[in-house]
Image 1 (spheres, rainbow, N blue to C red):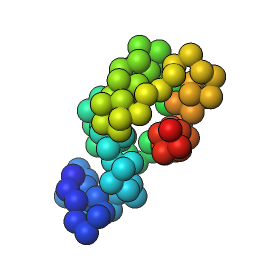
Image 2 (tube, helix red, strand yellow; image 1 turned 45 degrees about the vertical axis):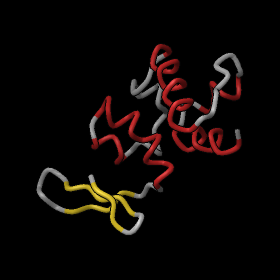
Image 3 (cartoon, helix red, strand yellow; image 1 turned 90 degrees about the vertical axis):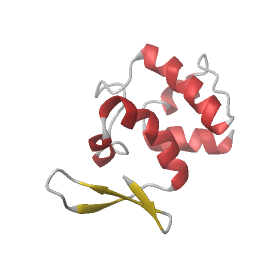
Image 4 (tube, rainbow, N blue to C red; image 1 turned 180 degrees about the vertical axis):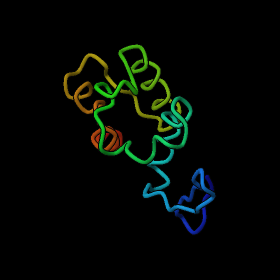
Length: 100
């Protein structure tokens, strides 16, 4: 994966260059998931329920909150229902990070 003119690109298994539709801020959060699942997770990360898909579980939620605090300087209250619900989907999690 590489950055060019504020756009991220990836080379698929067949050697084809593909644009990845993530902003730089989104890619910062996406790194958490890439480290666990590989770059292929970017294909469906924005559409999936992160818990139902098995991408994260309750232990990963704590690890992800720590990652967000370190990378974004935002502290998530894991006891808050809104935070838990937002953490189920990538886009709602990004919204939560942006408004904190």
